[in-house]
Length: 62
Image (cartoon, rainbow, N blue to C red):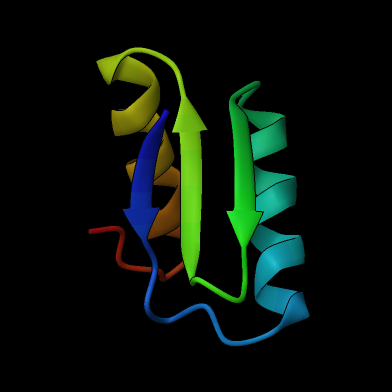
């Protein structure tokens, strides 16, 4: 499990957008609004895809 910090995540609407986009990509993940993180389970390609999706949504994944 790789944890990505997503500091721009501010509300439940952000969580909904992230959940929808990552689910559409078929990724295994969990989102924590309290910690402002997205945990992604998978290979380096999965992590790269998650970062790309987050970037497309306007979020920085660190």
